[in-house]
Length: 145
Image (cartoon, rainbow, N blue to C red):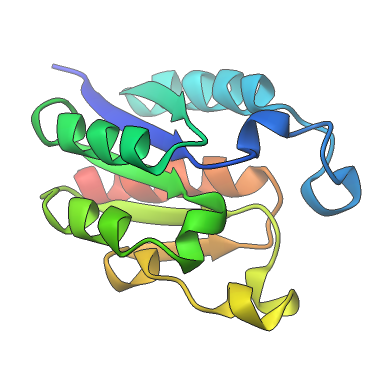
């Protein structure tokens, strides 16, 4: 049976390709989804992508992942630095979690240097652009073997 990986994206990531392309690049979330779906097929994984600007919707999706997903890749956006609730939801998920950031959060404003999600993540990929999603998918595939 094919294992499913959830790729979750937080606030403003629906604007990829439009918002601050000098920071986040020109690829859209749809481009990332297509690339991850193709790589997932190569790795024998099904990929389910979700984005929300609402913290509760992300938490609900993490809860649903407990029954449906083998692993989670999450780019929580600004919730990275603020959401204990997302951390708590991830702590209730038993599979591996990889945190992704398109930009290098450690080269940005000081408030972006702290991540609640990192306390749960098996790995963190930051500053690799949208390629970070594919790197995370490869790592998650390795963890799931």
